[in-house]
Structures are given as C-alpha cells and as structure tokens.
Length: 355
Ligand SMILES: *Cc1c(COP(=O)(O)O)cnc(C)c1O
Image (cartoon, rainbow, N blue to C red; front, side, top):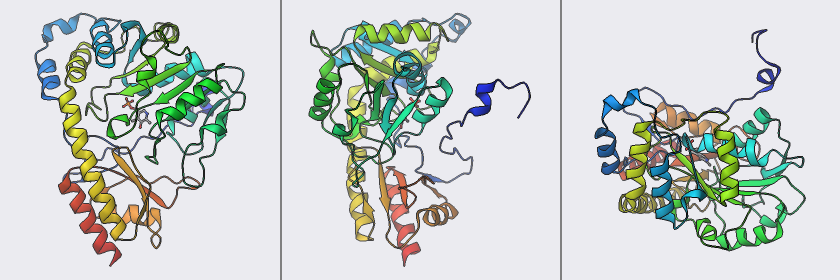
C-alpha cells in the first residue's frame, strides 16, 4: 500500500496465475500447458529471424499473422485481431465491447480473470450459476445484458456445449456481444468460428483463441479474436490507444509458422485426448468422480478425500495440480493432461495415497 496509488489500484483484486515452481523433477499438471512442445517449424521460424532487425519496431498490425489466421479459418483478414496472449485480447474485449450500461453476464464457475477485468474497468457483472451438473445453460443468459462471455469448453470444469446451442443464444440475444473464449477448443469441442464465415457473419459474435495451450506457445504470448469486421475495428481502436506494438518480431514469426502447422496441432491434440480418456478411466477405478472433459485438463473429486488435502499430499510428492478455494468447487482438483508417463506417475501416487 502506498499513498501514491490511484483510487482504482486500491480496489483491485488481481488474478493469481497457477504457480511456476523452479524445483527440478516436478510433475507439473497445474497450468494446462502442452507437454509436447510447439511445432518445430515455429521454433525454426523464431531461430531464423535476423536478430539485427530487433533494433526495428515490429509490424504494428501483425498483418502476416492476421493473414495466416484468416486463411486457416476461412475468414477475411479484417475479421482478425491479434494480441499479446489472449489475456490481453480479453482485456481489450472487456474495455472495448463489454463495458456497457447493462451488466456483463458470465458463469459463477469460470475463468477467474473475467471478474478481475470487471474490477479494473469498472464493469458491472451479473453472475449466472452453472446448473447442478456444472453445465452452462444458455437459456439462463436471456435477461437484458451488456454482453455475455464464457469459455467453451468452460474452465475449470472442462465441459462444453454444442455450437447449435450458441447459435440459438445468438438468435435470442441480438442487442449485445456474445464472446466465446475457445482457449481449449482443440481437444474435442465444436468451434463457433464457422459461423463467422461469409456474408452471414453475425454482427455480435466474437471468438477468442490462444496459442498458449494446443499450440504449446505459452511463453511466446500470442492470442487472437475473430468476428465481424466492425467488432475488430473497435478492438483496434482500444489497442491503438494502449500499445501499438503488442507482438514483437519473434512472436509474430513464430506464431505465423505455428498457425500454418495444423498437422502438429492435430497430432499433439489427439495424443492429449487419448491420455485423457485413459486417465479418466484409471481415476474412476479409484472412485473419483470426474466431469466429462473436452479440454486438456480434467476436473475431478474423490468422495473420501478433501480437495485441499489431496492437492497438498500430491504436492509433497512433487506432483502439482490446481485447487481452487472457491464455493461449489473446493472438493475438486483441476489436473492438466500431461504425457502418458506423467499420467502414470499421478495414478501411482494416488493409488498409494488412497490405500
Ligand atoms: C489460458 C487461458 C487464457 C489465456 O491464455 P493466454 O496465455 O493469455 O493466451 C484465456 N482464457 C482461458 C479460459 C484460459 O484458460
């Protein structure tokens, strides 16, 4: 606390990211990073950059990256916005599209950065509870609102809803923006991006992606949003009033190559989905109750072992998972899907702990 803080700083409750411990030989299953690493072509593109060019500013528009994203998804380049991680993109979305006189609607259990942005930008939020099975019910979002945002699949539950349900929501919610945060879409969820193609692109749908999860580039900091060109223009206005150069030269070069290597994404995502199915089976054999997941993590609880306790005993064995001390989900652990070896280490530890 300092008397020089502005009034808004005093009221903030900053987001707390999952820890990045420096200990060696950890089984790190707490922040949903990919265990397989990025496309080798992305790494080659970064290494191939002329470092002498780093004295020059990068392309402020990220034109090559927008072009690559547009091509991959069958969109026009003016439907693409890029930023320094999707967290930055989401910040601009809250400031530029979701700050309205009516409250923004999002689930009670969801990505915990959303309420943080609301505080930062002075946005009223209306919290919409998930149902008793931890599912998003789009019918619950049809009261007057200044915007709707949720991840699909949701985090930290891992549950997803079909695209057809979001289409119905869009038809019933024409007067505000609907933002779908598809951070984990590549592990078995239907993307809403096809709805944005061609002349029928809805005016009020924005889809946000990150290269941090399925493209294994959390350390590069690249995310993007796609939607109607007028929504993108609004985001550009915010971005150019904040930081004209959010993506450096290395980030842009690596991201273009990563976006172009769809084969690497598909192979590594398939492997994660295989490991996920096997892990859920093994956990169920140990009496865990695991929510269905279409993400690279699972959300699970044991009927006889408190979430906080299990988190701690796993940690004592060098296995780091995520536990949230929040209402409704205190008994759950969120476990990132790692390699088969990491998964086996986890299951072996749990068998010992529970026996
Ligand atoms: C990880 C995550 C993000 C942010 O990813 P960046 O690393 O900032 O691109 C956004 N939304 C959800 C739901 C996430 O889990």
